[in-house]
Amino acid sequence: MTILLKGGLLYDGSQDPPRLADVLLNEDRIIKVADSIDHAAERIIDCTGLAIAPGLIDAHSHNDFYVDLDDAERFFKPFLEQGITTQVTGNCGFSAFGVESDSPHRDKVGAGLFRARRAGSYAEFCAEAQGKAFVNIAPLIGHGTARISVTGLASCKLTEQELARELALVEDAMRGGAFGGSFGFMYEPGMYAPRAELVAFAKKIAEYDGILTVHPRANSSVALGYPLLSKPHIEIALDEVIDLMRASGVRVEYSHLIFVGKSSWKCVDAMLNKFYAARAQGYDIAYDNYSMSYGASVITVICPPWYLALPIAKRKTPLNRLKLRITIDITRKALGIGYEDITVAYIADDKPQYEGRTVAEIAKAEGMDPLDLYLKLIDLSGGEGRVYLSKYYNEAILRRLMEDELSLFMTDAWVEHQGLQNASAYQGYPHFLLMAQQWGIPMERVIHKMTQGTARRFGIAERGSILEGNYADVTIIDPAGLRVDLSKPDSKPEGIRYVLVNGTFAVDAGQYVSQTAGRVLRKRS
Image 1 (cartoon, rainbow, N blue to C red):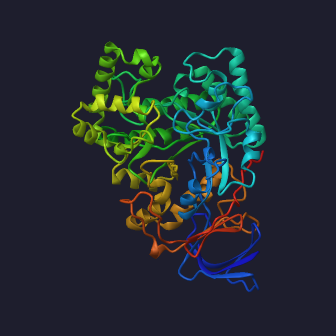
Image 2 (cartoon, rainbow, N blue to C red):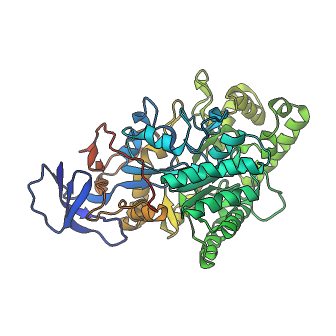
């Protein structure tokens, strides 16, 4: 099908100012971009007053875990409706592939946040996704998943043979076309891996010129697992990542740069200075950030590693509960974050009464101490409940990160099976665009971060730019009509007029169109 986009304001993905232009698409490719095109196309769209942009790219997603579901469409539709056509998946150490065929630990993949229905090899993942993907998927292999395949959630050091098996899974994925790998240092089992294992994994990614995304050990000035009397833990966490780069030579995308808790907000200057200093020393590091001031996590997020490593029975002993209480209370107060900043997203199918309420609210209603209530929720959910943690940013920090040249944008969100939804999964990118309008940030800079900038960072070829010969991933926006309603997290944004994935409409005149035109992308060597 030939489609002619007429008279739109073209944001081609670069940081150049927009210009009036026509764009001609044929099947899955962009075949002509010019000031004016006369062509008897099968479909002509008047784009007067609209912005023509490359399909938006989500730099940090977990949607590889939803591709093979029977009802996969409901998990991808909200991203298409906000203009996203490609998602980088497999972040935070979690990927839906990278598992040996005879592994007895498949059920542990995802560490409680996600469930991989058919966790297997990279090739099996690609085959399963064939013809089922609603967006383009640029996959990374998760270190946590590969380690789970070998030893489950065990906290022990890997033997030489076990490490070789882990690295064989990485090599298989990278040879198959994965774009890189990921670490999740705040999640099991990534938190248990010694430095030598991490360096070996990173070296394998670097061997194929892949990129490594890293969920650091700390996103705050004080974090469980570090000594309290030290420099801010968020800085120590970045130092660890730079040390791994130095030892392995890998390129790094620092995942979701956030500053959790008010006491962490003073660390912004120091953190950005570290990024620029590392780059000046020759290390290829950058970061991505949210458009929201909160994010999703597992319910055990505030529990220290020593507690999570204990068997369930030992967690409940009076001595360990007292030690846990002291550790959490000291950390929480030092952070400037409270139980009122933890909102429950989901506990269990038969416990909907907790959803959308803060831990402080629930504790007061049940006449319980907040920590005791929190531990009760952990038990009720089997340690697999989900929460939203707030105070990630204030407005000044968010604006500064949006304007910083090292930042890319992402949602880091998924549609929950049940419970309170995350607005980032439905409205995250339009919210970025609206904040840019509010703060006078040039739209071409914001669109660049969402498109060409992300494509180049991750090595996604022939996407992210409106150029002749590129794939026809296109998002057409009505800048004057953009609207979001964050008070209703799962509401559809307004102003996303057309979305095409590989030349096929996913949104047409503002209305969602069911399609499976997405593809699992392969990194070119």
